[in-house]
Image (cartoon, rainbow, N blue to C red; front, side):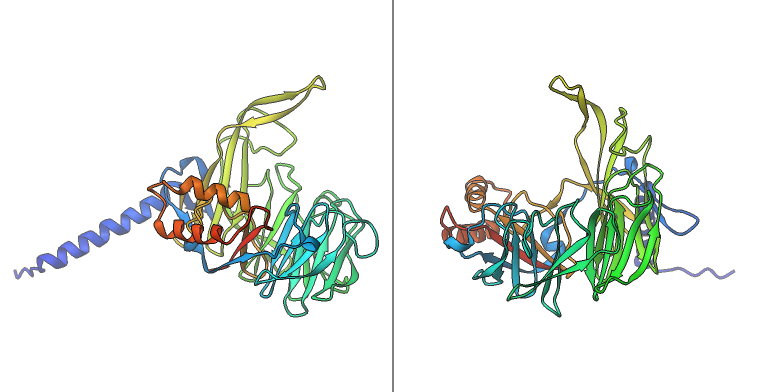
Length: 393
């Protein structure tokens, strides 16, 4: 009988490939499985591996915008902000909303603080239409069912009626359509979509098993995603007026729903980073803190842990946080804009302190230090905040 002999390098190549493939499969299967519906199930407490994720892993085309500082546009505090292709829009808690160009030059005050026509009290939600250059503002959580619209740059004002009496916790605007996450309506209405004219497109009724009501909506590369702020262990896609599971996050024990505060309950927050990555933050109730003599108490938690679920690789790993490897700060990615742009703002004193902090840190790259030094050299202590903007990859 004839026996064929494969070259040794071929055998080794096949063996190494097999080991690597099994290793990847095993690593993924340690904390990630696929259910009967083909949806990934992430076993949070089985996540053991550690990894790293940085700003430059996720973003490109970084820009620094130093907001012009003069008497008519002094920013006491940044309450909300939105970055567009041409503008930086800054909303404050007590002074109103300001409009700056991307080069930092001041354009005008969009709205004053107050309850008069066109004025605002608390701009909790901001959205922007790049085509019509219109800023949409949802004010106080418990205000009338209206969105305030400001045509930029002249800031011409009009009202848009929201097609629900419910409190709106979150909103996304895309393709002339608003999608809202009502905080509570008929006890189960979680998503409402409408046109600019108020015509309803769809309404999603959904009851969360953990009694969660507060939810957030994300526009990730044109795909709307939905998750409960806490008390929810599922990330959903919004498709054709339905919530379609994207991924489940299993826990050992009961989910913390914000009302009950039992020891051991798991607090979980989920947020999509892009179409592939989901960031999760979780902790457990360890005790209670009582205030004054009223008897009011709230839960205390152990250290928050952060993980990343990579859907393409069917794997999950722990990270300390999403690391700022551009300016070296402790900032992270906390919100996504519908237009795919990212921003983070820094108070000037914060940047000065950061420069002093990382000056002698050997773990900080010299390029980061030089970039920060160059920025700080251009600033005065009383200048307006500085914005870091970038495009999500």
